[in-house]
Image (cartoon, rainbow, N blue to C red; front, top):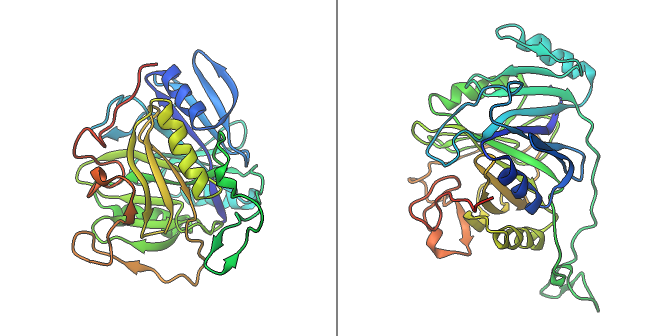
Length: 329
């Protein structure tokens, strides 16, 4: 199945003004806004929609983990597919054992094996290509007689959505089979009891989906947005903290996927991650098998800028430094 990536996320939120304010501080282009919600567009024309939690047109919330605004969560993740033939093939596969609804735009709506609401549509995304950031290293000067781009203080915004993460509390390996065997996702790394990293067949990011286990926690955990480079991730983190939003973990460098990442609590639901410099892979990638807590080769991150976050993974916390909290609207 030629699924190319995330096309749209729709949130149902308890506090529309607060959720809208966060997306604006994150650097999104707001294309429509009203009392019942807003729509935002990324540089590649994928979208984020904010709707009131009591909007009857939304799928029901699927969430059971200890965060504020538990009525606020992603209600549906829409996956973009390469063409109409792929869309029809997905529809034929899904109708074998579950309800599928086709809306008046041709989008297919259904659920995965954990009950999360997902949809599929022919992608309308734009291809993006940025000039590589010029970096000077020892005796290798990509930037001569000009200052670094990162020296310019500026407002930044995300280019595209990279991946989503769900808590999968029962049998995440069985839940992953839905994506791997029926939708053509590829396994990229295996965290043992911790979860499975997967990518859709039409993407080269290390992962576009992670099903993660954390006791009984259930629900949408986070969405990750790609920024051009290290400096843009740092600028974004400073930009949103200046707006009063709270960091969960980051900035840091992951040792699985290699991304430079910064995670911020999102009042629309879960976290938003800013990342850059992720591993790009193809079918020659060799799946690695880790045992978090037992295997010394899995240490979460090679460095963290803030020592008070030691031992804290994304969407978990141990004290007020990393616990979820939001400013007033």
